[in-house]
Image 1: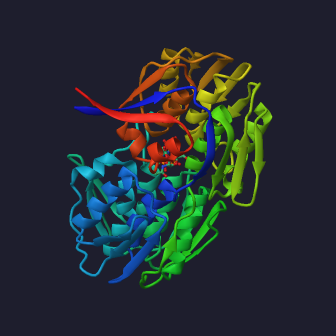
Image 2: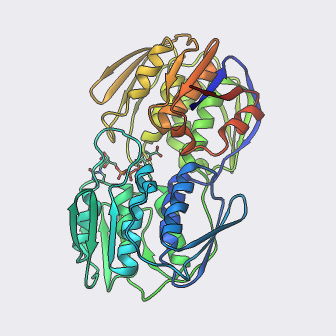
Length: 421
Ligand code: EPU
């Protein structure tokens, strides 16, 4: 028995949708919260996604209590925490479980956990995280599927990242906040989620400067204490709804966004000919016809986000001309293109590149959510297509999109779930 999403395409979208808390901030904030010493941490704006459920399971494994006084409010209490080996299957359900490496190492100078999982987007090494831990004085061993990372003392150090990795930047910050002395991360990633995690840690008593720039300095402190935090809005969810609206809206307003976080997407959509009005914390999209092809190259922030490349591909199918997508972050992030081809798209897939020839009309078909953002790409294609699209492996979508069915139905989409053999 498994669940599929069915979408009857062709219905125009109208109304308002509100964006939830950022998944990629949340999945770091929850492991970061365990750095608080014997105290309660309140996090607001937690999205209802399965990645959060997996992380909650891991908190409970560590004897950390998690309660939800209201749907998006998490109360995490570390008073009875124990540092046990993380071997629960939840570790393998998402990649971000590796943030427990940084926070447990930082707090206890010891962590043992299984290999983390996550979307397959081609090889996703985390050597830079491990090199960072080693630079702080830790010893890393990998044996029989487990990482064991330990240190007598963690001592601040200068760390240059060969690549501006989001995960390595955050993980090193987590390990360094309680280290002795000063850590400097050079060539750090600049994504907004990193700033959110740094703000969270600073409010708990950490001393982190420069988050959001390529040089972050962390002055180690003795201990951290819980402090309430509101998660920033999810720029990738916002971008996904923006793309859907450009594809299918008569008049849609997307609320609770930080437009600056999705500037690169907005300017590309405007270049395509989309009808977008951008306000302080919202974007309003009116019917956008006669879209033109564009070229994009994915880059680290503030460049065009790789996570929006997949949703955007679906929209490019209906743009006039030849669009060229270059992937510089994940060379193999093109599995969604094969699924779009099943629906009638004309896409040539090359190494690290896809060329989309349009406009083409899509027709409903059986397709797979090959990964989280590939799933978003299928939902957008399903909304655009003639007939019914059946999306398989929907658990990928539920890992990162808060209440997507309700949000889309409220906008006028026809979408439902069925259980099949
Ligand atoms: N890389 C290395 N070594 C490392 C770390 C990264 O070679 O030690 C390479 C990766 O293989 C990749 C590139 O550096 O080619 C970028 O990786 P990065 O570490 O920045 O990505 P990440 O932290 O694993 C986060 C998001 C991804 C998003 C990327 C890029 C989270 C939990 N995940 O991943 O989000 O695509 O940054 O922006 O924050 C998603 O939300 O669907 C998603 C996959």
